[in-house]
Image (cartoon, rainbow, N blue to C red; front, side, top):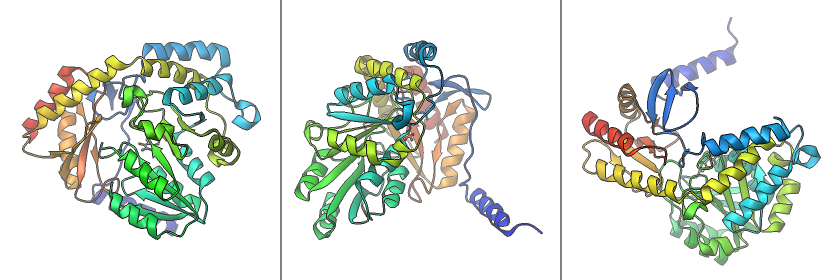
Length: 386
Ligand SMILES: *Cc1c(COP(=O)(O)O)cnc(C)c1O
């Protein structure tokens, strides 16, 4: 007789497969980049978040080699024991300076940073107000914090204001992706800050997709957000920065508090210090990265012009490297993605539950490492398949 819990999992997996919701991993050989070998096939990749082409950049690779000889591989302990290396420390200072905030704290991943910040600053007497399209890690973080969790329609400031007005919670936090990961559009930062000020709330901005790309690389914060003590800024460092980790930048008092209370910071082994050395080099490349950002902007314009008038699919309004092409049904998006792959173009289909039902899409992401010809190939293939 089969163990019944196992049977339930088998039925669940079969149901996912029947609904075209089963996820599968592609196998990457060699380095991440615009051209990759995946499942043994050489393809042009339009799906990484390596927006500036830094993930395998020679300067970062050299920084890793150099650091490796100095500090070895493992951190060996948590930050509060003996794992906090000078490379981590120097990166935090450089990052805070770069984004224009007083202090910063380096986490191992963005997911952990979001869990850490929300659980350290919110508790059951708090209320978290979250955009409905926020990243899954922010949803999980709000739930884990025990706060009342209230969601507002995507970028709907009027609904948010109504919710803030009727809230009796003594502690409030507004939480938003700065650039939305599946839609590519941006949060109305100053308008959110107005509401945070009016209702005495924190404003937490997750700039996983803006850091390195927007604002000369400094990300999507406005000048007002930079100057505000109530803004907590998060950049993840595995996307445009090309490495790994995430940094929270804000007032020193908040950083001191997180250092004491953020459990995903306290109770985990520090990330390998060589990664922090790579991040220091990445920060230099981002700061000097105007040419990369100009190339990226060129590709965005090229794609949007090239796909205007496409018969099948609608490009969402986005000025960022995330250019979603909405197809509709899960099965149609999956089929289109497969057809593109046959032509050597890797563009993933994003399905429910990651995006709302009926809005399955191809999530096209562009990188400074693409060539004009790469983008032209994708445009031609999409017209052909439509
Ligand atoms: C990718 C992402 C994260 C998670 O960051 P990791 O460093 O990959 O864990 C958090 N928030 C948003 C909006 C993201 O896109």
